[in-house]
Image (cartoon, rainbow, N blue to C red; front, top):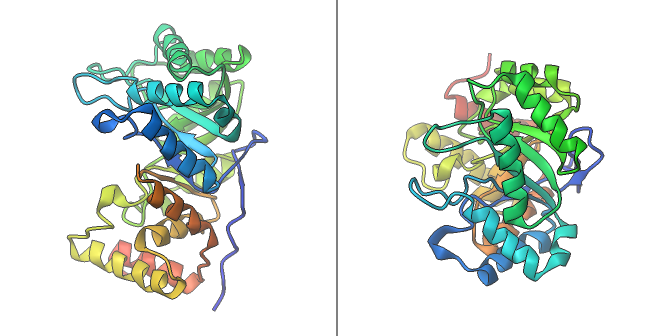
Amino acid sequence: MSLLPAVPATRPLGASGIQISPVAWGMWRLAEDGRKAADAALLVHAALDAGITLLDTADIYGFDGAKGFGDAEALLGEVLTAEPGLRQRMVLASKGGILPPLPYDQSPAYLARAIDASLKRMRVDTIDLYQIHRPDILAHPQEVARTLDDAVASGKVRTLGVSNFTMAQIEALQHFLGHKLVATQPEISPLRIACFENGELDQAMRMGLTPLAWSPLGGGSLLAPASARDKAVADELDRVAQEQGVGRSVAAFGWLMAHPAGIVPIIGSQNPARIAEGATALDMRWTRQDWYAVLVAARGERLP
């Protein structure tokens, strides 16, 4: 059977010249349950020690619907203040543009303030990858682009990306930007497969965008499948996982990573052992037959 290419030890972040790990770690639950800096540091170390260099957060992370806006960034800032050397080991990504209860604001004045606020909370001089978290329909892409270009020119941000943008919205923003977008962050998992056939990943490859996959375990549905379709996908992943001596979540990450677009799954666990386990997806090898078997199970019908 034909083996797909092995996943490289690092991936390029778009055309930026920055190299990142083929899996990332996400901090959307970093500040949950009142976690203290010492415990948060254990998670950061778990990711870095496992070879995960791309750490992804956002200003909205920590917000519980009433309070907590910025808490995840602030907690990471405490960790980096206590151990300044950690900053040099990571590619730091954050996101902004969501402002409850509006829900979105990417006006020039607000977006510039949001970038400054993220820098202040994380206690860093530069954000390696700054992403617009969700599109603001009331913001003209030319104004958004101008604010982002200014952030790069000032040295506050190194590279730019988007999250949850449609293909047309990506094209529109890039049209007005002076700098190339390097990343897009859609929801991708073995249960969320629309991007494999609707052109999202084709656009990413054409534009040189690194796809960062949020919720790569389908919001946890892969770990506790309820529907017949979800169980079929889990069964196919388990079959390959058992052959290679890994767990289902690792197989799901590896399945995404095998795609030629260079998908980087964002591990959401806040458990050190599971973070380290997720990084082992790099070692998986997929055949075309096994990869397509998962896709067919997810589609619920044979490919034409």
